[in-house]
Figure 1 (tube, rainbow, N blue to C red):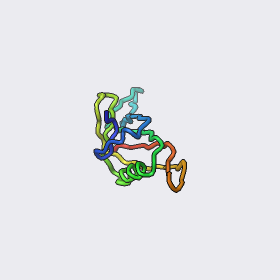
Figure 2 (cartoon, rainbow, N blue to C red; figure 1 turned 45 degrees about the horizontal axis):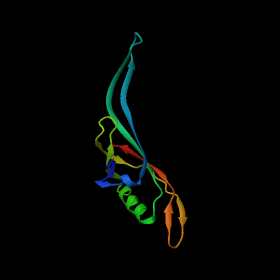
Figure 3 (spheres, rainbow, N blue to C red; figure 1 turned 90 degrees about the horizontal axis):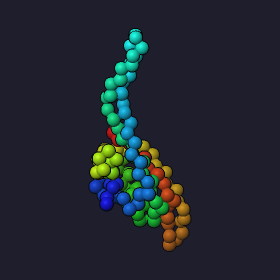
Figure 4 (cartoon, rainbow, N blue to C red; figure 1 turned 30 degrees about the vertical axis):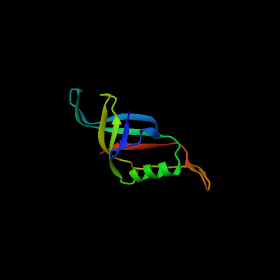
Length: 117
């Protein structure tokens, strides 16, 4: 089952962790009698994805998808159990290499955070 895609390309096979967080954007006011009034403006998703150690070719493909900066992400939405879609950015990513040898280049496991626009 595909549960994580970037721009329509399935990267589920590289994922070892998927965390979907919902952040609510709201205005809150307290009136003179001490009652609080809250108005929901919008909700945005933050999707955290754990990536398994990758070889050079797989990592190159994933990094190419991330370099578009603004991307469409399909993810398993916990509210519906179906694929949800969000337009996201990856504000920062850090990739650490596990081994760099002539015949084998491999990264360590790393985490990516996608923020919905």
